[in-house]
Image (cartoon, rainbow, N blue to C red):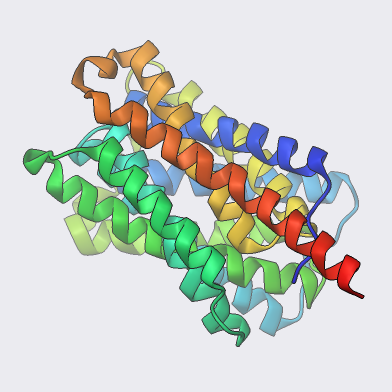
Length: 303
């Protein structure tokens, strides 16, 4: 049984989640397509992380196996983000974030599979509790089903990404900033390929079709919500399991939907089940560290 992390780590984790929740709002504000948006986000993030790493005198050179692994992980992240912003465009912020919050349910199975350990019943039950909350939050929205389906695919990809990242942090002890630079480069590559696959060569000129404040939202998205947030998330993975991190990420719908209500008035589309669903998600997040702590104390007392 893993030791529970210090309480301040959980507080920092939730502050990070609140920051990440703003990405959906920025995605709604930016007028570019989902794939173009992610291409710019990852390009700016890769450049920003590389510059900071060089200024801090951290070498970007890696053994080819590590570099290839990070590019591959970045490709998974790029696909996840394309699903994320695609769901925002196809449905709305609320449906997108609700679907993404199923990450913990998927992680309850992907983490044990990739780490070659048994599935923990606690994680499965808490994941199912989150799914109940998601159903209540999303409600019955037949006209948003495509957006919800894309969000669920993004959640599955998100369940794989942190497990692989955790392995790179703990086993290969990679520097977070260097990891961000390489992973964002991989994510950008997969987005550029995705642009050609979806829209052909004509999609590339559309990358420059910025309007209004797009440039500012993209800079915030690329440098604050990606370079800083991503590197800090990697730092927190030194103290938390991938499952604990993803479970806390289920609070992102709550923060994001509340932000969408303030900025876009999406609260008019919500039903009473939304509030019950939010409470269910919060309960699942609170129960996980509490139960882990209690089981740890019982184990120590039994020795």
